[in-house]
Amino acid sequence: MAAFGRSSFLVVCLAAISTLLLQNMRHDPMLEGISSGKTRVLDLSYAISDKLVPWPGDEKFFEAKVNATVEKNGYFTRSFWMLEHYGTHLDAPAHFPPGKTTVDQIPVKQLFGPAVVIDVRAESGQDADYQLSPTRVEEWEKRHARIPEGAIVLLRTGWASRWPDVQKYRNQDAKGKMHFPGFSAEAAKLLIGRKVSGLGCDTLSIDYGASEDFAVHHLSLGAGLYHLENLADLSDLPETGAFLVVAPIKLEGGSGGPVRVFALLP
Ligand SMILES: [Zn+2]
Image 1: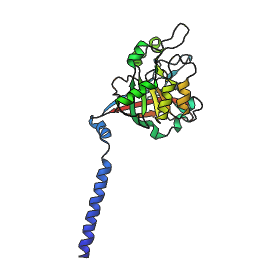
Image 2: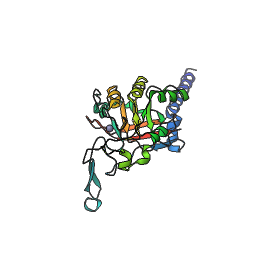
Image 3: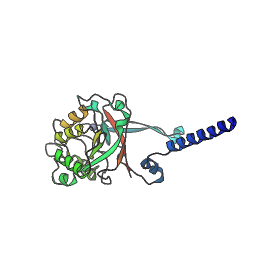
Image 4: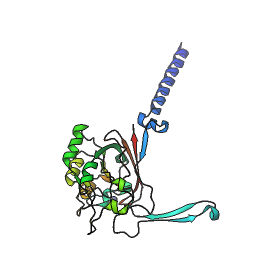
């Protein structure tokens, strides 16, 4: 009787353990769907080369050199040099004071979050100096829901269609001033209040091109958010429902750096 009690207890324990193991193997359906193809994954980063659109002013922005060749060495390696803010990149808070956190210190959990896509292609098409207003953000919230804490807010201006044409993408006037859309300081304040993790755009900068004081950079980086700039074409993203994985280079002490951004679509 005692022996039977022990073995049935053991069976119950084993059953409980295997149930727990099975439960642990079951992930979120969105993650499980990646390998089966049910979840679409968009890569929102441009491949890095010397053909991208740099911020005006730097003569050198990217260089790659072959170090070893298969013919000579039996293997292939290169070395490369680039600006931290070139191509699809992340601005760490330390990029603009009073922001302090460098790219390697951004808390990992801040790099994952639901994507909030605000579509301003119509406005941007009519006015290259368009700045996202807080009213437009509130309109988005009326149509969907309040922007959740930890969201990553992307401004879809349609500017990616001009990439990588330097003239069209920078859209500089005779005085060299750039004209492309961006967030307004007021909209940034509202989004900081919503405790979002980061802001992103499909242009050269979160601040609109003609900005001279980079007000949004100071505000949002100062509040500990990060920026994603020169994101690739955002046209396949839904306004809500996508999940972003943001993977910047872990460069010690960096003001920012190249970033790989993936959007998971249910
Ligand atoms: Zn930047």
